[in-house]
Image (cartoon, rainbow, N blue to C red; front, side, top):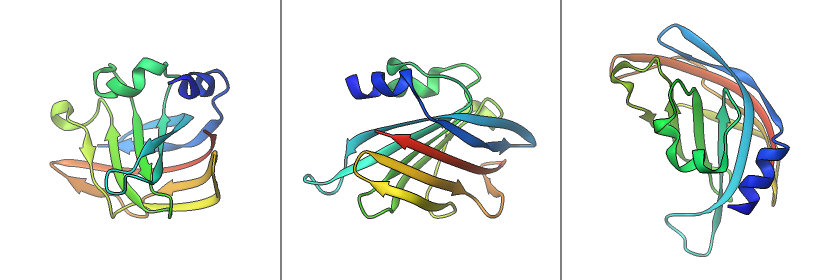
Length: 143
């Protein structure tokens, strides 16, 4: 938690967009924290949060309850695989976040202990549960 607090003070910017059902939000804030891998007890992953606003340390656990939030939460394994990706947006039908993997691409520029930098993108819009969404965000985060 202390590490997340330190990152909030000097959160490196993100640059990109999230478009949901025709509404586009700029994602300008990036945060990251080390987290346990759910399948390998001895491995650590990196959770990246790309958001349209500054977040507090308590926000990480309650992203779904933040009114109007546009954000993407990404879990990346030690070997650069995405094992979790959730999209939050007020423009989602029924207000339910979308979770899914396989349609996005992560291009890393830097992936070393304590830092992840790269680009998360969807080359084509995805349709799920009546929602059409797409994102393309570059980021550089120290964790």
